[in-house]
Length: 498
Ligand code: AMP
Ligand code: MG
Image 1 (cartoon, rainbow, N blue to C red):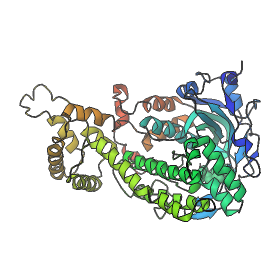
Image 2 (tube, helix red, strand yellow):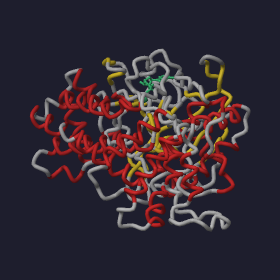
Image 3 (tube, rainbow, N blue to C red):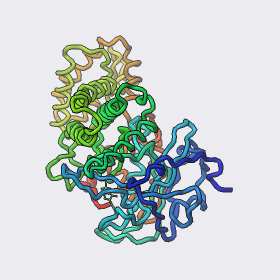
Image 4 (cartoon, protein in one colour):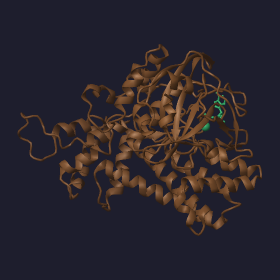
């Protein structure tokens, strides 16, 4: 029986015609094999929870089921600030939209499926290395609570793909509520195709922003939502220490979800000017610059929408970006520190913390997790304990710093401030543990999984998938996955070729 018989499929984007896409058949991978299949997501989509040979043949392009209508979307975009009209799905195909048990429709997209009319000099392929990174990271972000495209499965093959060395072709099955990017709108604007631009706006409102349909100015109402969701997304990235790395407008989802994973990175040591993309010589997409770039990209989108939204309205919508981002970021940092009730001295306390963390190169994730552990009981022989704050746990926070005296000074101030919160220490720490993950996809963890997978051992990919499903939970058997990166990983450079 076909896996698709129990699924509900639609093809709404296919109903847009003139110049929105090309119908393209995937190019089959040679000797495909499953690296992993995401049973939870498969279940959401009413697909089999076990990987199987039929799905492998279908997603690797060996057979094309009648339910697949593969298309390559046309878009353009600003790359590193420069407009490039020639973009589009150069190696990925949208095959169908599938209804989830949550009643939302999701795009099924196969990334690495071969040449399309938009491949330019590329080969239409994606290598295993970068596909593993996208597969793991999209699921890791999802389970942290950060909006993102997701990944249903990962396929490796014997198809040779030539980058700095010969690698193998892979396919990441991407699942997202939309594959419409800011760059889609830019394409129709810059080519003067205003009728198609309007069609795309109407399509988005109908499918993604139905509540905005009945507003007095539906296009403006939709743009406002894009501004707000983008601001919230980037606030989350920065609160969790995530850097996207390639925030070109073609990598910006209209739904404010993390999209198109490349040389991304999570902060290990706190380093605001962290640049994870080695071709980003100016630091345009550095960690600290993500909020600015979000606004730059929204401004580019606003320009593309100017035929249909008045300039003053666009400006007013863009003006909501900074306040929204700051509000979201401050809520998240308050949750991370357990300081939920605003006090006048809080700003200074946060500033001092960030300065100290940067100077001492403190591991960002471990610090906040350790700060959530101050309620744990001290060992029994330390019966002199007077406060409820564990001395052991305090010491472990201080041990993350080189300058322990400065850290102690800050921690004492923090603890005095925390006492003003209505919640008890236990309550505060409990909720902090739900805001401060123990496990994130550190670069070295992904690298170990990649190195093994390149030797045909996919076990580490599977372990990381299981681990990252519960980033906030203690998982004793995986405790070492929360360790600091080993020395070999300090200068790990992620290749930008993918
Ligand atoms: P990206 O850097 O993945 O966001 O891609 C930028 C543009 O290059 C998009 O139009 C992609 O479809 C295209 N592209 C990236 N890699 C390849 C490839 N290996 N083959 C064909 N097109 C590609
Ligand atoms: Mg892209």
